[in-house]
Image (cartoon, rainbow, N blue to C red; front, side, top):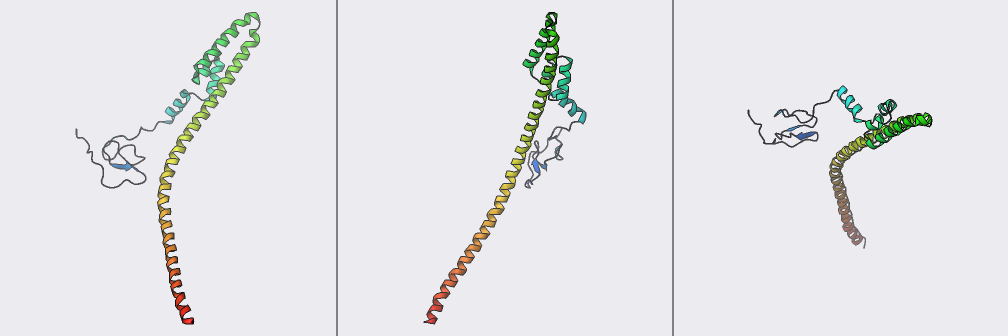
Length: 191
């Protein structure tokens, strides 16, 4: 089995190009597989079923959390990855169920059950919002990194423009100095 060459390409990398992780060849940044060596550069795309199932099992879906808490209080909190809250609601429901023998549980069981559903739903909404903000923060960081590169390029252009302005100012100074040397000659002729 032959090994790919480890020498990078002689040409310079463009704005939307990266180096291959294995052979160092310059490839498009969106390439999944290096055309030079055949090594995968990124993970293969996921199917929509896989991503939907992963999102569902990850937690943070308010409907699923509420439904699970409706089945048994504490399951929605467990789905939201909040073990302490799940245990508290499960124990609370068990205590409320045993208190039905004292006729207090007739009101306590529905109260615990409804509050568990409400809590699971709202906590799942908060978790989903936090995940969205994290994703937006990551996108903002990527956009900031791109804008820094763009600003660096524009700074070079601005600097070259400033140099042009300075050279125009220098030219204006030279014209003024020529005019001032002409003035004494005119004043000598008038005398």
